[in-house]
Length: 127
Image 1 (cartoon, rainbow, N blue to C red):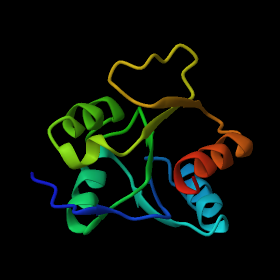
Image 2 (image 1 turned 45 degrees about the vertical axis):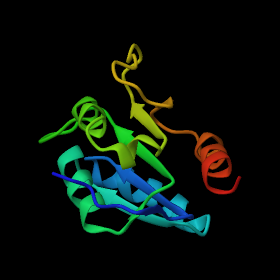
Image 3 (image 1 turned 180 degrees about the vertical axis):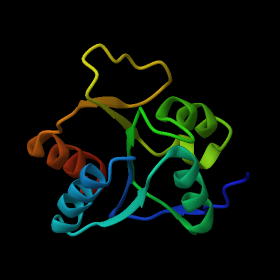
Image 4 (image 1 turned 135 degrees about the vertical axis):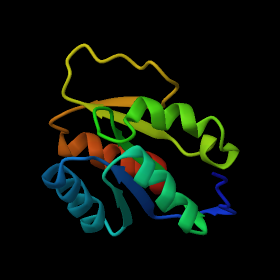
């Protein structure tokens, strides 16, 4: 799969999370901050969604434990798409001892603190 994504869309965040309630909750916060949100239920759906848009998000929030394609697989696949390498990815997990096995910009422990999410939005979408 080749991602044909020519430019980054300022004000867009992608949430990749299989739990519908968590995905919708994160999306609601992002939208309340005045940003556009792209949602996917697993890594494969995220790659397909990114391939169908002509823009990249400014930030990807990525769950680790998902069916079809988990977060680690998504990060490995990202290495094959140069356009995605410039998009910061923060992995999310409730697992206390989760370690970053693949390159990612950071880690968010679930449940995600609102201040932490707003901080990422400020850092990556409003700087």
